[in-house]
Length: 210
Image 1 (cartoon, helix red, strand yellow):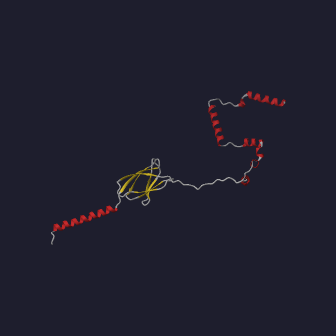
Image 2 (cartoon, rainbow, N blue to C red):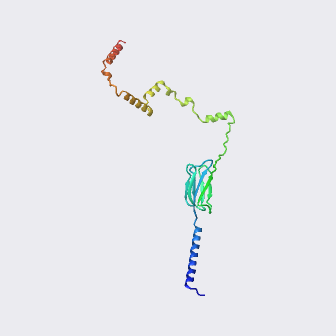
Image 3 (cartoon, rainbow, N blue to C red):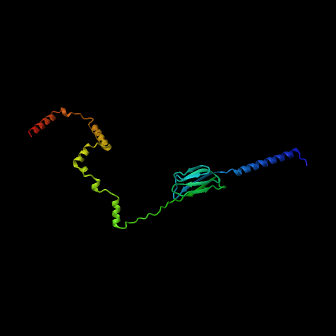
Protein backbone atom coordinates (compact mmCIF):
# COMPACT_ATOMS: atom_id res chain seq x y z
CA UNK A 1 0.00 0.00 0.00
CA UNK A 2 1.40 3.38 -1.02
CA UNK A 3 1.21 6.40 1.28
CA UNK A 4 0.91 9.89 -0.03
CA UNK A 5 3.24 12.65 1.11
CA UNK A 6 0.86 14.16 3.68
CA UNK A 7 0.29 10.82 5.34
CA UNK A 8 4.01 10.12 5.45
CA UNK A 9 4.68 13.56 6.92
CA UNK A 10 2.03 13.16 9.64
CA UNK A 11 3.33 9.71 10.50
CA UNK A 12 6.86 11.07 10.80
CA UNK A 13 5.72 13.93 13.07
CA UNK A 14 3.90 11.49 15.32
CA UNK A 15 7.02 9.36 15.67
CA UNK A 16 9.18 12.39 16.43
CA UNK A 17 6.73 13.69 19.07
CA UNK A 18 6.50 10.27 20.69
CA UNK A 19 10.28 9.99 20.83
CA UNK A 20 10.68 13.48 22.33
CA UNK A 21 7.92 12.87 24.90
CA UNK A 22 9.44 9.56 25.93
CA UNK A 23 12.89 11.10 26.37
CA UNK A 24 11.53 13.93 28.53
CA UNK A 25 9.63 11.46 30.71
CA UNK A 26 12.77 9.36 31.15
CA UNK A 27 14.81 12.50 31.97
CA UNK A 28 12.19 13.59 34.52
CA UNK A 29 12.31 10.21 36.18
CA UNK A 30 16.11 10.32 36.57
CA UNK A 31 16.15 13.91 37.95
CA UNK A 32 15.39 14.33 41.68
CA UNK A 33 13.08 17.08 42.81
CA UNK A 34 14.40 19.94 44.95
CA UNK A 35 12.55 20.29 48.26
CA UNK A 36 12.84 23.10 50.81
CA UNK A 37 13.21 21.27 54.12
CA UNK A 38 12.45 23.28 57.28
CA UNK A 39 11.99 22.24 60.87
CA UNK A 40 12.72 22.61 64.55
CA UNK A 41 15.19 20.51 66.56
CA UNK A 42 14.43 20.30 70.26
CA UNK A 43 14.55 18.27 73.44
CA UNK A 44 12.25 20.11 75.82
CA UNK A 45 13.03 23.46 74.14
CA UNK A 46 14.59 24.45 70.83
CA UNK A 47 18.25 23.50 70.53
CA UNK A 48 20.62 26.04 68.94
CA UNK A 49 23.72 25.05 66.99
CA UNK A 50 22.51 21.60 65.91
CA UNK A 51 24.15 20.34 62.70
CA UNK A 52 21.85 19.23 59.86
CA UNK A 53 23.83 17.97 56.88
CA UNK A 54 23.75 15.60 53.91
CA UNK A 55 26.98 13.52 54.06
CA UNK A 56 26.94 12.38 50.40
CA UNK A 57 26.38 15.90 49.06
CA UNK A 58 28.66 17.64 51.58
CA UNK A 59 26.18 20.40 52.38
CA UNK A 60 24.28 21.35 55.49
CA UNK A 61 23.27 24.04 57.95
CA UNK A 62 22.82 24.65 61.69
CA UNK A 63 19.83 25.62 63.80
CA UNK A 64 19.44 29.19 65.00
CA UNK A 65 18.90 30.39 68.56
CA UNK A 66 15.45 28.81 68.86
CA UNK A 67 16.30 25.53 67.09
CA UNK A 68 14.89 26.42 63.64
CA UNK A 69 16.58 25.50 60.34
CA UNK A 70 15.77 25.60 56.62
CA UNK A 71 17.79 24.20 53.70
CA UNK A 72 17.23 22.88 50.14
CA UNK A 73 17.48 19.10 49.77
CA UNK A 74 16.72 16.50 47.12
CA UNK A 75 14.05 13.83 47.32
CA UNK A 76 15.59 10.70 48.78
CA UNK A 77 18.47 12.49 50.54
CA UNK A 78 19.66 10.93 53.80
CA UNK A 79 20.07 13.68 56.40
CA UNK A 80 22.09 13.44 59.63
CA UNK A 81 21.07 15.53 62.64
CA UNK A 82 23.69 15.73 65.37
CA UNK A 83 24.69 17.80 68.37
CA UNK A 84 27.21 17.39 71.17
CA UNK A 85 25.66 15.59 74.12
CA UNK A 86 22.76 14.12 72.11
CA UNK A 87 22.25 10.92 70.17
CA UNK A 88 22.56 11.28 66.40
CA UNK A 89 19.42 10.98 64.27
CA UNK A 90 18.89 10.15 60.60
CA UNK A 91 16.09 11.33 58.33
CA UNK A 92 15.36 10.35 54.72
CA UNK A 93 13.46 12.83 52.58
CA UNK A 94 10.42 11.04 51.07
CA UNK A 95 10.37 10.66 47.29
CA UNK A 96 6.82 11.96 46.90
CA UNK A 97 6.87 14.77 49.47
CA UNK A 98 5.61 18.27 48.77
CA UNK A 99 7.81 21.06 47.51
CA UNK A 100 7.94 22.53 51.04
CA UNK A 101 8.47 20.02 53.85
CA UNK A 102 8.44 20.80 57.59
CA UNK A 103 9.57 18.38 60.29
CA UNK A 104 10.01 18.41 64.08
CA UNK A 105 13.02 16.48 65.39
CA UNK A 106 13.38 15.52 69.05
CA UNK A 107 16.89 14.65 70.22
CA UNK A 108 17.65 12.43 73.18
CA UNK A 109 20.54 13.12 75.52
CA UNK A 110 23.50 10.80 75.11
CA UNK A 111 24.35 9.98 78.73
CA UNK A 112 27.76 8.46 79.43
CA UNK A 113 27.91 6.23 82.46
CA UNK A 114 31.24 5.78 84.19
CA UNK A 115 32.24 2.65 86.03
CA UNK A 116 31.48 2.57 89.75
CA UNK A 117 34.11 3.85 92.17
CA UNK A 118 34.35 1.84 95.37
CA UNK A 119 35.59 3.73 98.46
CA UNK A 120 36.87 1.51 101.25
CA UNK A 121 38.16 2.36 104.73
CA UNK A 122 41.57 1.40 106.04
CA UNK A 123 41.34 -1.95 107.70
CA UNK A 124 43.20 -0.83 110.85
CA UNK A 125 44.43 2.37 112.46
CA UNK A 126 48.03 1.25 112.08
CA UNK A 127 47.63 0.93 108.30
CA UNK A 128 46.11 4.42 108.21
CA UNK A 129 49.04 5.90 110.15
CA UNK A 130 51.54 4.18 107.88
CA UNK A 131 49.78 5.63 104.82
CA UNK A 132 49.89 9.16 106.30
CA UNK A 133 53.56 8.84 107.18
CA UNK A 134 54.31 7.60 103.68
CA UNK A 135 53.00 10.89 102.29
CA UNK A 136 55.98 12.65 103.95
CA UNK A 137 53.98 15.76 104.82
CA UNK A 138 56.28 18.38 106.43
CA UNK A 139 55.40 19.44 109.97
CA UNK A 140 55.01 23.05 111.04
CA UNK A 141 58.53 23.26 112.44
CA UNK A 142 59.97 21.77 109.26
CA UNK A 143 58.06 23.98 106.82
CA UNK A 144 58.76 27.34 108.51
CA UNK A 145 62.24 28.53 109.43
CA UNK A 146 61.92 30.37 112.72
CA UNK A 147 64.76 32.68 111.72
CA UNK A 148 62.47 34.15 109.07
CA UNK A 149 60.09 35.31 111.82
CA UNK A 150 62.63 37.68 113.42
CA UNK A 151 60.87 40.99 114.13
CA UNK A 152 63.79 43.17 113.01
CA UNK A 153 64.12 41.20 109.79
CA UNK A 154 60.40 41.51 109.07
CA UNK A 155 60.52 45.28 109.71
CA UNK A 156 63.50 45.63 107.37
CA UNK A 157 61.74 43.62 104.67
CA UNK A 158 58.62 45.77 105.03
CA UNK A 159 60.67 48.95 104.79
CA UNK A 160 62.79 47.94 101.80
CA UNK A 161 60.21 46.01 99.78
CA UNK A 162 59.29 48.10 96.70
CA UNK A 163 55.69 49.01 96.06
CA UNK A 164 53.66 46.72 93.83
CA UNK A 165 51.38 47.83 91.02
CA UNK A 166 48.40 48.50 93.28
CA UNK A 167 50.45 50.58 95.73
CA UNK A 168 52.00 52.58 92.90
CA UNK A 169 48.56 53.30 91.53
CA UNK A 170 47.30 54.43 94.96
CA UNK A 171 50.38 56.64 95.42
CA UNK A 172 49.89 58.24 92.01
CA UNK A 173 46.20 58.90 92.67
CA UNK A 174 46.98 60.47 96.05
CA UNK A 175 49.61 62.72 94.48
CA UNK A 176 47.21 63.70 91.71
CA UNK A 177 44.44 64.52 94.24
CA UNK A 178 46.84 66.64 96.28
CA UNK A 179 47.99 68.53 93.21
CA UNK A 180 44.41 69.25 92.22
CA UNK A 181 43.49 70.55 95.66
CA UNK A 182 46.65 72.72 95.89
CA UNK A 183 46.40 74.03 92.34
CA UNK A 184 44.86 77.39 93.30
CA UNK A 185 46.78 77.86 96.58
CA UNK A 186 50.06 79.76 96.91
CA UNK A 187 53.19 77.63 97.03
CA UNK A 188 55.34 78.32 100.10
CA UNK A 189 58.93 77.37 100.80
CA UNK A 190 59.47 76.32 104.45
CA UNK A 191 63.17 77.31 104.28
CA UNK A 192 62.18 80.97 103.77
CA UNK A 193 60.00 81.04 106.88
CA UNK A 194 61.90 82.76 109.76
CA UNK A 195 59.74 81.11 112.38
CA UNK A 196 60.88 77.70 111.18
CA UNK A 197 64.52 78.77 111.53
CA UNK A 198 63.82 80.01 115.06
CA UNK A 199 62.32 76.67 116.00
CA UNK A 200 65.32 74.91 114.49
CA UNK A 201 67.86 76.93 116.51
CA UNK A 202 65.86 76.47 119.72
CA UNK A 203 65.88 72.70 119.19
CA UNK A 204 69.68 72.80 118.74
CA UNK A 205 70.11 74.73 122.00
CA UNK A 206 67.96 72.22 123.87
CA UNK A 207 70.05 69.34 122.52
CA UNK A 208 73.29 71.03 123.73
CA UNK A 209 71.89 71.54 127.23
CA UNK A 210 71.06 67.87 127.45
